[in-house]
Length: 243
Ligand SMILES: NC(=O)c1ccc[n+]([C@@H]2O[C@H](COP(=O)([O-])OP(=O)(O)OC[C@H]3O[C@@H](n4cnc5c(N)ncnc54)[C@H](OP(=O)(O)O)[C@@H]3O)[C@@H](O)[C@H]2O)c1
Image (tube, rainbow, N blue to C red):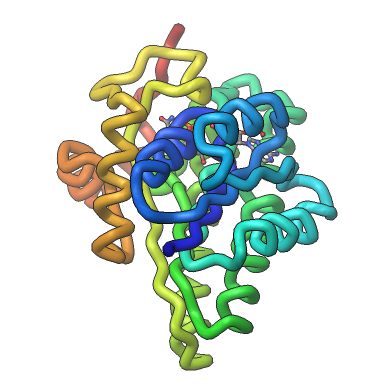
C-alpha cells in the first residue's frame, strides 16, 4: 500500500490530488493550516487519511511533518502543494515578504525534511507544485514569480545532490499554468484550467515519475516560446492582469 503525504491539501490543487489518491489503494497523510478543512477531508475516509496541522512558515513545521509521516506509517511519495501568490504592483512589503516566507523558507523547510527522510529510509519520490510563473520575472507579481523560480532551481539542485550521494530519490517538479482556485482571486486569466482536471494530469505525471511536468500541453507550447523571448524584449512587454 502506497503511503502519500500531501502538504497543502486543504484546498485547490492539493485537495483534488488527495481526492484522486483516495480512490486508490493507499494511505494518505494531509496537512495545511486549516484544521477544519483537514477534518472535513478526513471524514470522507477516516481509515485512509491521517491529518496534521502544519504552518510551513513556522519552525515546528519540520517536527509536525515527521509526526504526520509517522502517523501515516511512513512515506513513499511526498507532494508539496502549499503556496501563496498575489499580484503586487504596489510592492506592498507584507505581501512580498509573506510570499517569500511561504514559498521559499517554508518550501525549503518541507522539501529538505522530505529529502532527509528519503535519504534515511532507502529512497522515495519527492514532488512539488511550482508554476510556469518561474519561467521569467513577472512585473505584476515579483515575489511570486521569483519564488517559483527558486523552487525550480532548488529541485534541480536536490536532484543533482541525490545523484552525487547515490540516493534512490526521484523528483517531479509540476508546473501548472493558470488554475481556478482560491489563489487566483485577483485578476482575469487566460486558458484557465479546472483544479480537478489539473489534478488528473498531476497524478498521471507522478505515476510516470516525470522529472518536470508543465500542465497542460497548451502551456508547454507557451513556455517553449516564452523562454526564447530575449530579456530586452521581455522587459518592455506590457504584461499585467487588471481586475
Ligand atoms: N492556481 C494557480 O493558477 C496555480 C498555478 C501554478 C501553480 N500553483 C501552485 O499550486 C499550489 C497550490 O495552490 P492552489 O492554486 O491550489 O491554491 P489554494 O487553493 O490557495 O491552495 C494553497 C494551499 O497551500 C496551503 N498553504 C498556504 N500557506 C500555507 C502555510 N503557511 N502552511 C501550510 N500550508 C499553507 C493552503 O492551506 P491552508 O490555508 O490550510 O494553510 C492550501 O492548502 C501553490 O504552490 C501555487 O503556487 C497554482
